[in-house]
Length: 436
Ligand code: UGA
Image (cartoon, rainbow, N blue to C red; front, side, top):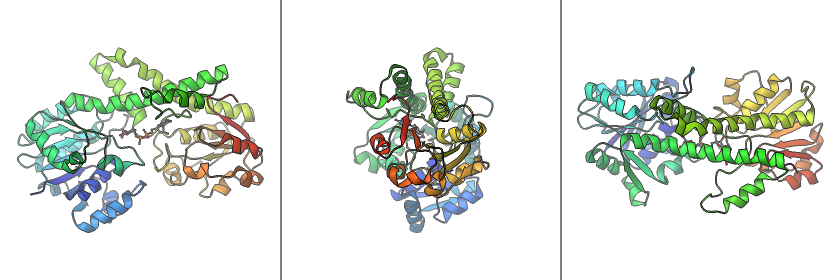
């Protein structure tokens, strides 16, 4: 008999996991406390944007294997329960807020059958799994707990779930490992590496991976600062060091830095946890990683002031991109949106364009001006800023928009536009980390 699965928390991670597990042939029930979200998902509609996931969700709902509900009792037949709720940054500290994880396990406990396994996928501070295991040993001693961190990237959610570059499982016994191997059997037979770890190591793998990625981005943004001071070009530098396979050319794109719902809050939560553990000295460098990252947002605003002067009140700035990265509608801790808000606060008239992120951005910052149409957004602007690297922005022909703007100045905050092309069309082209 095929295992039955439940997924608790149907946001980005949970909805993707539920649809992907259903596509492997499992019966999956997704539970979320947000009735609107559940109604949409049950109807085969995705409450956020992720390439190809809408089609997969609709297809899996039709098979009858995948369902969504707000009712926790619907999970009582399930053998494996994946916890996919959010762990945002606390409102009053750097630490992760574990309210949703704790409440998911508490609400699940009464419905766990004998031998059920609760599998955490959310990103949590090390030690959380041990504490939850202890909690379950009192509330549901018939069940077990394991940790299986998720490494999916927004924009590649299906790919990263069904063809991940590794599977990591934190377990305390062989049975939990063999049940998880049964769940992931199709991935394992396709050759995905399997790493068995203890609970703290499994939790740490996730934050270590995100800390490494954040460090790599801040490293190249630090090099951008040095290039600006020394008259160098960070894009050439990145290309050159990236050829060394020990360094690699990924995550060396200098610009306005990292954002999103994961990297920024994960490095902060990691520092907060290390402090509690008395190991803060080991992660002192992450403070600098965070500081370099936030400085990149200020540096691009400095370039705006170099071009327009200190008083921005007379100028109209068109911002291309508001999501934290392309192929996503996520604006959580988006550098692009933060920069737009700061320029607006400095008195500039700011108009923001994005292929997918306008409505989510409007919910957070209703007072910014938004334009659905690219032409409308750039009309009469004194300065154009390329802040999220959607491919449609790279397809812009600068000569075809020259007549729309007041001044032909562009700042490339992502170092991805064709500088020659823009300059040939008569534009002043500025970027971070290159003085030329
Ligand atoms: C990140 C990790 O890459 C995933 O492995 C992890 O599972 C996920 O967090 C998570 O913890 O859930 P994601 O937040 O989707 O995934 O985005 P990334 O692709 O890592 O990009 C993060 C930020 O870094 C973006 O703002 C992007 O623009 C920026 N970035 C990325 C750069 O500024 N330069 C680069 O070279 C690469």
